[in-house]
Image (cartoon, rainbow, N blue to C red; front, top):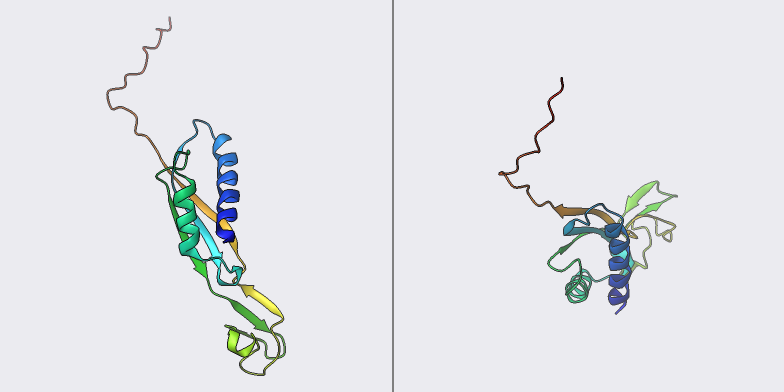
Amino acid sequence: MHETDMTRALIQTLRDWWQSQPGQPQIARVHLVVGQFTCVEPASLTFAYAAQTQGTFLQGSQLVIRETPLIAYCHPCGQEYKPEIGRRYACPNCGSPMEEIRSGRELKIDYIEIDYIECSTNFTPPAQPEVA
C-alpha cells in the first residue's frame, strides 16, 4: 500500500510549509488532485491521512481529493480519448497505441484551507499619544 508512504511525504511537505508560516495557522482542509493513472486509491489515501495525522498539527483536518480522468491524445487521429485497459489503451478510432497522456498522472496539492481565529470584539487598541 504505497498510499501510506505518499501520506508521509504529504505530511512532511505540509509541515515544511506550515512551519514557514507566521503564527502557524490551523489547517482545515488539504485539497489534492489525483489522476486516475497514478494508481492511487483515494479511499486508502484518505484512511492513511486520518490515521497518520492523529496527534499532529494536522489533527482534525480533512483531506479532499479531486480525481482527474485519464485522457490521451492520438496523433494520427488528432483527437483526445479516454483509454481503456481492455483495448490496451489504444485509440478507439484508429487503434494506434497510446502515445501522449494529457490528463490522469497528476498527484499534487491543489490548495490548503486555513481556519482563522477571530479576534475578540472587545479588543481596544492602545491609546495614541497626543501630538502637540
